[in-house]
Image (cartoon, rainbow, N blue to C red):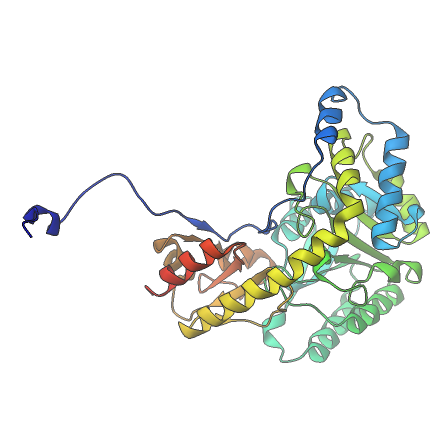
Length: 360
């Protein structure tokens, strides 16, 4: 065959034929549930509304059916971050803005707290081999420091690990003895079983607040809707602090349309989450990238490669991650050797991921 010999030489172009695989954000890798067309039309025709209380009552009723918590214990916010801002800015006494947590964990919780003048202390989970020791140290710190707040995200972000609920219940009781409020952030709560969640403990623990959001498992990050569950005493104070006309009319309509089928949507995604996570963990382990302790049922994980800027390494092969440096405010041990990786949501991206990681 007589081929153009120049084709075997170096070829330059500004066009990049590859695509970036975005595994950085914690949104649902399988997308959103189906939104009925009539709901979209209702939103467009009713966009001039704040909302009516009947529509909010419908959302509360559907949320109660979904999570099994009484209406009087539910307060809606602008995502789970909106709930944290409410707690930090309005709920607690400004004369005692102190918080203890287990790091690494949700960055914005800590950054928001420090922005309003809060003092945060972290216990590094990576220093402890088992949860008994970890929570024992936390309990001791609560008794000696007597903070206003203790913040724990469960499932943990960035590791995707799930704490044993028995330890969380015990910590809530320790907090109660020393006058602290325990915040359990279940932003990834749709990846928990009912037995793992702390939602029902708001019925018996007066100092417990549990945060939830529609952004993660329910696939509705764009509507910026969250809620918190708490005891009746705390809920009355929280309701007094929440901003008027929260949530928005579009978020109420979309959430109300999806909640009746939410459990089916989640069931379909749970098996896919486990499949893609198992595939990715196996692939990473084969290439000497450590996956720290995690649950197979959650869509995120924390990776480490000693002596390597891991985020840059992935970026060079077209995979976008969240650098461990971004979590340093929540845990001093987080460096460029770590990244948070979210699972891919389809076989095409999984195959592309395999091909790129094989280049390492």
